[in-house]
Image 1 (cartoon, rainbow, N blue to C red):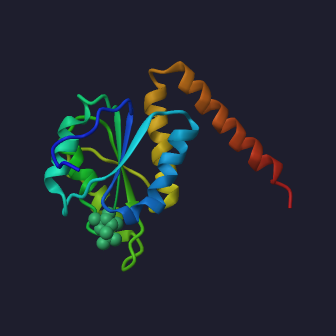
Image 2 (cartoon, helix red, strand yellow; image 1 turned 180 degrees about the vertical axis):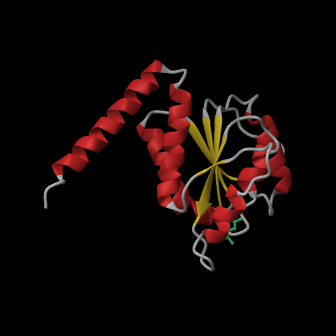
Length: 168
Ligand code: RP5
């Protein structure tokens, strides 16, 4: 696999993560995108271990057709912020739960961006990854009526499921 080139894609959302070990968390984002029929790609792109690949991914993302990037990382989680600094696409950051500090390190690394370069930071772990998928869907639904309908149906089903189990 090249550091410089990425396969042609019809993906609208790039789900990237710092390590294969982040996939258990980040699959929650990909699962939601699949459920809402949003084309997506999933790749390991590390800010520290493959910095050239990270810059190339971010700088090529818009011309490859991507509209939103979801970036997950743990520990010294610089991937979302660095990707946001190399593209003007919306970047949604997911703090992956780290072993040593339970993800508080990841959260603070991602959320404390300097003014001028935004990252929409989600909560720690799989809830954050799931919400990252839903946030990407909300962004895309602004200009896609069919997706807006699927998203509304998703929320209605979720509400119905909660109401069904509301009495103990
Ligand atoms: C980060 O370091 C990754 O996002 C991962 O969460 C963390 C640890 O990576 P591994 O050592 O498990 O590959 O870059």
